[in-house]
Length: 116
Length: 109
Image 1 (cartoon, rainbow over the protein chains, first blue to last red):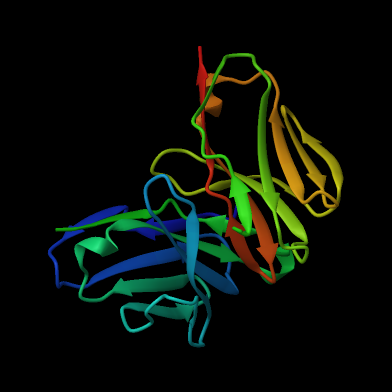
Image 2 (image 1 turned 135 degrees about the vertical axis):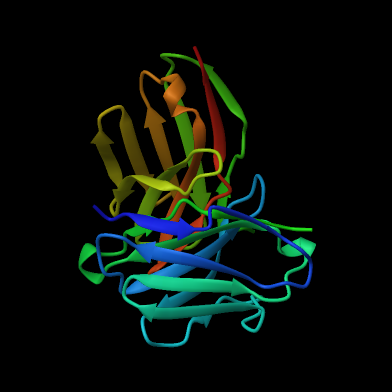
């Protein structure tokens, strides 16, 4: 149980285009979803926290107009990287948590974004 | 001072060795302590989860927490090549996870 999927697993796009990444909890309803970014050989950095039906809370230094997060249902959250640039190339990972499971987060497999 | 310090390695050990991975932290408010394993180009998976000082054992893995020293450790006994991965310590801060940089471990057959 507690499986989280991400789609796509990897994407290559041209500079200036927008990319949407989906995060789904497959066998449970997630009260909260998180989006992380991980650069090579570095740790996961939390970008934003989202709860179903409400606006996402962004971490300091993360541009909310550039990284649009939509949490439309208890099983789906999307991250859209708008007007992507090469410096946005990274590994994006989502996670989901359920209130009755305490603070445990279940992570997706990640999406590798390369912006040319 | 960083909130979490973790030696990035890489750490290379022979198969069967005991591996010790460590993290120090500065925030006394951290209540929950976790270790995640991350294989290359994959999402992290939870290995150990604890909230109190002391030891917690699960198979070949033992998590140790020393709140007074703000120090946590993960021990892997009888290490296997399949244990080769990056190990990240993580701390819960009001529902948010703060991760260490991760230690890259390689277990050689």
